[in-house]
Image 1 (cartoon, rainbow, N blue to C red):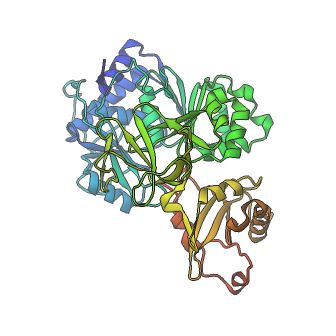
Image 2: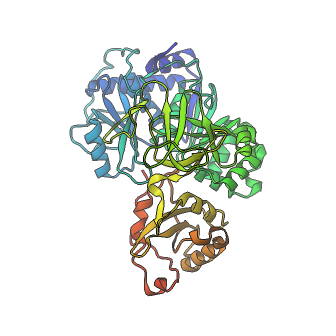
Image 3: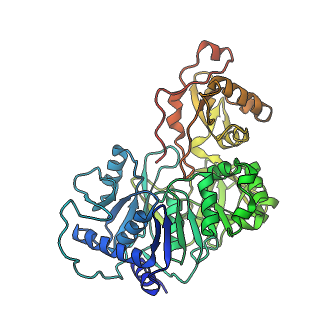
Length: 512
């Protein structure tokens, strides 16, 4: 039976107050402590003017405060709007203009009309005395979450879920998210996928193990120490995990892990094979979906071995098709725009952007791909990221995957740089740890491109920039276009076919 999120939290706290429900750097948060903390903060939100269906900004890191704050927002009958704590002022202000939040928890709001509330303490520096009236535990917002998304390039927009803050805690949310797990949360809870799986898990009996930031060592330690049974990662995390020496990632350390779900970006075929060899196909799942919840595609390890490179087939209730630029449906094997349609009413709507959903309900995440003859979906790249070089469309993801096979490369981003003759040239940013201390970045860049050229051929980047910093955040996202200005007009040496490795005058902002 569906119940309000606030009642689910309260009932779990009453049923077993000492049950550990969150483990973070500060230790254990019990079910009773979570319920009490959410109740108290919800009272202060109500006194601050928060009402049913209001948006409340939640801008905190990966710890118990984030969990308490979101549970408090639901208990107050409102909708959480998670925002990265490090969001720049202009983006925060634009989001607040779109969402019109009543209050903000954590980082200070950008607009003066938004009340600032701390997880513990006061409202605007002067909290009212007394506990106030008991809360109605059956308050439930008409939307259970409002998430910000911008893909890898665009301006932030808000995806507001159509589903209300009601849930049946006795039923699994999805076939790939079973009940009663120990879930490791390594991605930022302000990002749609970690937020959704963590809180849907918490509401169906999960215990959450929260990492403040992903590192391969901390991830493995957490699985082993806490008996993690379910974890979600992105390909960037898999790449870094597999770079650890085999002696530090022994399969025995992951004996408790039943499901490793990866999501967020296409996974390179060689990397996916390594992961399956490491864990076994029965424990590896992949899901293709988006913040907009316009469809879900899934594949397990065994099916992937029979269809290498595929992200799977649609789950019941989802349809997938491939169309050309004129919206004509393409036959299997033809590459075009991936469209999905989900049964029933739209699962979300935008604030601050126009939907691409057509009158028949077909929608797209902006990805290109193809269907094989058995209905398995294979992705190429994002529509907006494709590089048009002299009329030939090149997929950055495939080039990045090859560059990341080099043992020195921790990460790679490929972008198109404007060029008068070709329209665009291919440029690569390579994250090579330790560069600049024992080695010359320019020499490193030339060496890596020479290594990749036999496989990449004419797709080998014309320009390269070597840095020592992570190029993607813990959600696997990067702002490609922010790197384009780092590649200035070619010098005489480059025009003659040489390569240079430059450092940008100022590094692009980290993805938020």
